[in-house]
Length: 565
Image (cartoon, rainbow, N blue to C red; front, side, top):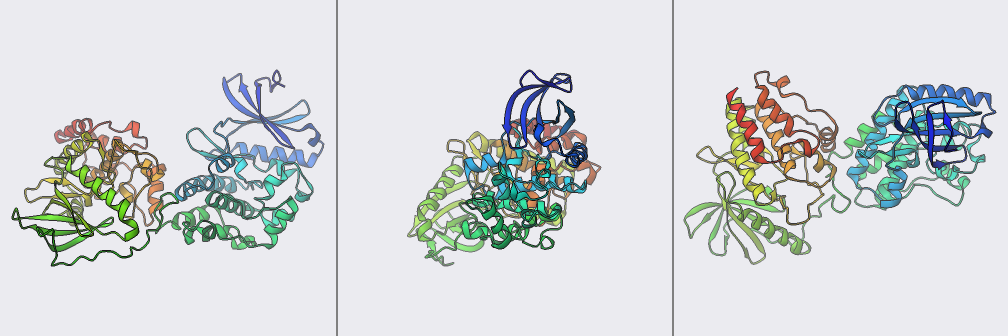
């Protein structure tokens, strides 16, 4: 077979996979000098004229589809009594292999991958095509992390009369069949929705909703049994996410989602109150046996609590008074339950050490850290002024020159933070304070990490922080200094336009925009902005960290040019 050439240009290179009805080869398009995939149908199946007509019709329809989440079909033809299809070559493996290799996916991965698959399926359905055989085996993963739908039911056409009478690779498919498909009835778009529900169920839990010793037993379960809700299997799965999956798995097609778009929207909305992190920490347990804090309390006989200012993670922040040095201070007090003591205390001390290493006029200073009975506390410089968030809420947006001056101050502080090997991780206007001299200072290092320790992948986010989150944080990937430049770019964007580049009512919809949507040009919101400033903002908001500024000093140099517009 390796010496064979189809269509006078497609040279067979090696076999990739084979099933009961077709074999897929890696091939070379000798005309365009690119590698491709060639799917060659079994000769024994080519005697059915109805099948051939349907194959030609559907292959032509699929070839017209153009979407990043659909495998591209380049050509098809008939040669040596065999039909063949020439397709895009994707060498990253299948979604099924990923499931087998890693088991249950994190929730943010399921939402991200599910959204891609549903985007592709929406395009397929708009062309009037029903896939008929959606399963993880037929979803390919590109080297860039894109998920692509392939095998559009062509094999299943050959089983149209009674799918349960065929063997071979049927067992791999029947686990993803809709009830109506299992009965051999005509299937519609709702059948594909059911199959997507099974795929997402398997990604979330590591197992399919129905399994058995043979295809008949599995099919009967699709028809008669109710699936165990995903959150019963993995308790960290939010009920809202379970409900989306269970609706897709309804026995009655009319009770499922009406379209792939509707299911995707429901999937995104199910995450509105859920942190997009890994399966180990979606819901913080209410603390038990917490030490109580009294407003008349004086920590270690020195720091008097005066006024509660707000929360910051597991800490409460107070205005306080240092009776020894006769000055006002900010006191960050750690509140831990008995089962949180060890990890929480270690993280708190690490934060204090991070902050104490940094001395700069644009960074809030740490004065002291201590322990009073069961209370750990950190003493910081007290800033008696508004946050940048409060400034923006009052003024809307700022003139370019003022915004650039503020931005340069923030970058000065950020440069010092980075020089100490620290990534802030949560740069946002609420984390930037203005002192009585009009100087802006960076605070809120509660989520920062030092490059000397293993970088975190867990993205601690809420609806306030999500608009400032870098794409790599949204994915739960490793972060770097460039993550801070992205967040600062969002801050700068808002300073000069009064709006966020990406916003929404739900955390995941915002993060999805960070990952996949282009940044609206700042000039569309404020036509008076200079080109040089817009270039700085847009470069800092590049999706890839490598395409952003590589240092704070580099970004400062470019931002300074915006003063001379």
